[in-house]
Length: 462
Ligand SMILES: Cc1ncc(COP(=O)(O)O)c(C=O)c1O
Image (cartoon, rainbow, N blue to C red):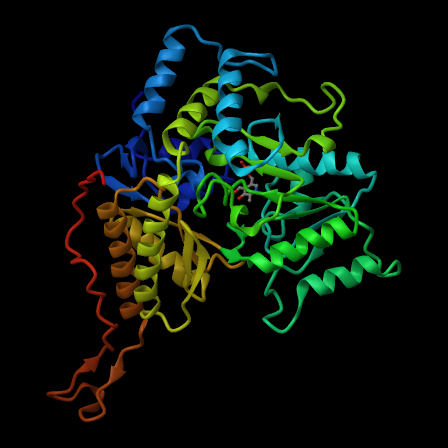
């Protein structure tokens, strides 16, 4: 196929609902690891990673090889919820490498292949188990945009049209600043039969709000929220669609919090390869589904089972990968600290490899991201006003490439800040008299961690 012109076919035919392509205006062709290429052969460092669906980078060679072998051997592709050899292998490795070593006992429910499908299944199951309707969801949360999950999503931009009832909104940790105990607040509402908030079937939360602006809940807040759910007879659902699969450091984002959620939702990187797949982990005592009570044609993406199994074997057979993630996360933090010195309003957000920087304004963050793209870095925003620049580099990004991407972010921030400073008049030679000059305040020099220089992408394995 020949493109009419670079992007005119999309402008002509694709719905206005398209989003990411508006900021990243290129036609992409190939990708490997943390590099994505466009039709003109230009390379970009990918700090978007399909919004967390590519935690292991693009086209991991081992996953690709296993998938090609499976396909060329006429391995099953669409499997509904039939028993299949590749599903058995996935379940076996998931149990052996993820659940058992963490002392977790869950049944695995395969849902329709997106995060929002799995969130809806978890909400529905919690309602069935408890006989209640209400779900508590939090300010700034994002759980997907299909109608059930959308009712729990906070952002008004997505919450258009008629919304389903049955969700009560509660403030996330820190929403009203440090002075208000948001767990105590919710406890009060749930304890008071006259508060107007019905006892919930579930409390649904993200340990780090990915789309909501990288808001991090503390260990004690999560623990207290888990205890609160139990005390009020509600299930605790952790939506680990974005923060899970290693993104925050361990396989699950709640691992170091000493809680055991009743239901856990995983999608995005669970397939390892960017293939559609989603699951709900269900404590056995809550697995009260009738056969086929909740179904969906695409619950058996066998290609995803193949790549997921390889991802588990390759990255999660011991603790080395988590240590590599921690090393990269501290590099990100170091750079972000320097970058925050460039912007008066800046603040660091997130944890693990789900970090970012609030620029204080969506307009500023947008300008920086657009300039980053021109310089060869693909990076996105999050937050209520899209004011947070979010670093979602693949967890496998080689250190030199990670640094290179962060340098581009730093350069772009510095440039945008320099341009946005109002030119001030030299008080000694006002109005540009002879010898006078318009002074543009210098931005803080770029940090000295690594020299900048033109983008030359050479990924070395470390
Ligand atoms: C925490 C969380 N839950 C659910 C979803 C919805 O996933 P999907 O876009 O695959 O429906 C997302 C997507 O970004 C998410 O971040």
